[in-house]
Length: 208
Image (cartoon, rainbow, N blue to C red; front, side, top):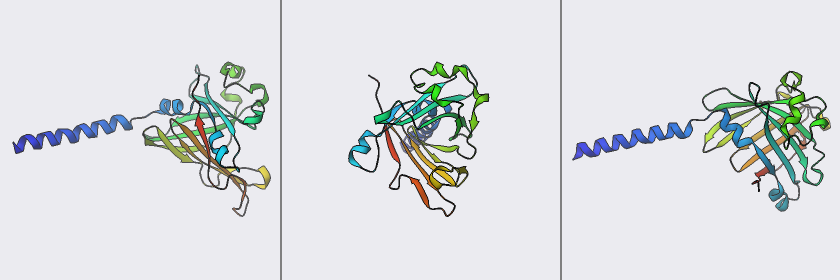
């Protein structure tokens, strides 16, 4: 009887290990799926007056080209058709549970406003026409249960916005929300722009 219980215990341990491996197995397509969608910070803005209601859209593009690309658009909800940020991200897997989201600027971005609704608008340009924001890539680690967390590397992302010399970004990505804390710092490491109490919480919107 003792031998039977020992075998059952060993089997349960092996099953648990195998299950963990399956759960923890993740690739760049999983990350792209979690990031894809429309988000807004209306809930946070309703309870914290220092935070605006921002809309965030991320949509896969260039599905016929090598790589995993996302078009990203951000705007104040009240002026959603006048985005203050348009970027293209390239998602890459760098390890078993490690990823990087590289950030690119596109030529004449105004032409592509609303491309999250019509990704084919971006077919008139290609990766070779993009300009990478060197040092601004976000390095992510998969933490299980559809959650990714990461940040930029120290002071490597250069910025001249509002007197800054560099910018940082800390990100958490889940199936339900994206939390992003972008901050700008001057040469004395003093914050000159960005939220001071924590990141913006963008809740994923369910398509009707």
